[in-house]
Amino acid sequence: MLRDLFYNYIPDLLGSLYFNFNLNLIPSRDHPLDIQDIKKICILATSGIGNLIMLTPMIRSLRRGISDAKISVLVAPNGARYVLEGGELVDQIFVLDDKKVFKKIREEWPDLTIAATHRGYMRAKRAFRTGAMYRIGFDYDYEDKTNTSFFLTHTISLDNSKPEVEQGLNLLRPLGVPPIRKLYMHIGEKDRDFADDLLRASGINNSDLLFGLHIGPGPDDKVRGWRCWPLENFAELSDRLAQDYGVKVLIFGGKSESKTAEIVINKMNNKPLLLAGKTTLNQTAAVMERCNLFISNDSGPMHIAAASGTKVIGIFGPTDSKIHGPYGESCYTVESSIDCRPCHHPHDPPIQCDKRECLESISVDMVMEKVRSVM
Image (cartoon, rainbow, N blue to C red; front, side, top):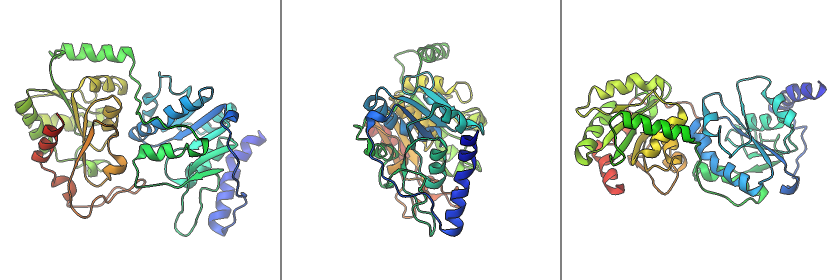
């Protein structure tokens, strides 16, 4: 009871003292880390599905480097759990949809917590609430306050010039664990059987070339529209792919994106197979695994396709492809060269840009040229 009261209220009190009075009551520490002492690890990964996928090389590295440790992951309530659930990469998954989730984590009493997403103070405070003795995360300065990651015992400088995968692997430096640079997305045999049955029922043979598209919610969407290529471009691209390569085109997406996908399909001459809203996350990955190429905006499905081993082309506007681009040897991007991009960085609010020139200046010809170069 007293322990729970301490972890529920003391972190907020300490944070208030620091931000309001510049008073830090947590002494600087640099505990030596011996991985032989690490038996339980908790990873805080409460961002998007794509962000979690880009952390899976770090989790792979931990699984192999500290093979006897029990690994748990805290994820956001956005379906991200299905990236890992059912696989052997982690032992337990917690979802941040319960106010008592940190009490549940403390019942496991982790030896090490890794705050694996960027924003320092909030993630560091959550790491403290897990009760772990060792807490690793990124340095973070906020306005005139430096070292707002003071709840952590070991901090790593965030290198925004590196891909997110490499940033995650950097967090393992205090542990001396060798890095494994390979993405992970759980695909079960039932998911593969579903994909086979679905494609067979749709008249698709094993010999057919399959190209996948993720259109997203469209440019008019208030939340994610700022990352979306124009709908008419996707319609023209699909027709040209079908005409030039004789491929079967598959349209992927969630339930909320199905209406936008139908609008685009109505603009096409060669009708694709619409899968938006008809598959689970793992079934989606299994179908993507069958694709010869996947073309997408900067989105979670783009990273799912990359983790599934599919060749990927990402279309990038405001975001930085060097950080957020699809990761792997068979991953490519198309982007414009206008001077104002990239203008969006992690945890920034959505951009307020009327022109969207960075995306609208990417022509269908540019994407087709990239397709020709990689196929």
